[in-house]
Amino acid sequence: MADPTSPIPDPVAAWRSWISQSEQQWNALLNQAMGSDQYSQWMGRMMETYVMMQKNMAESMSRYLGALNLPTQTSVEELKTEVSRLSAQIDQLRAEPVAG
Image (tube, rainbow, N blue to C red):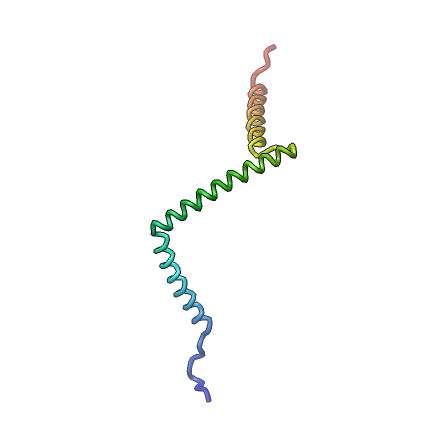
């Protein structure tokens, strides 16, 4: 028969402890790996690859949108700049007193 005065084991506490220890071990391992020259070189190559892929995607989308006769993001930004410039000129003209 079980002793009624003994504490009931808490499975959640054991799980929480295991998670905490695992996190500390992974943290130590990854910090050690990230401090190495190999990691820095690998990360540099990954960033170069990412930048190249992003550039290629932007160029492809630009050609695709051009083929569909749709504006690119650059075209929309240029239009926005021009509209802002014209709006400022209109506001300036409205603010000038009318000579008469």
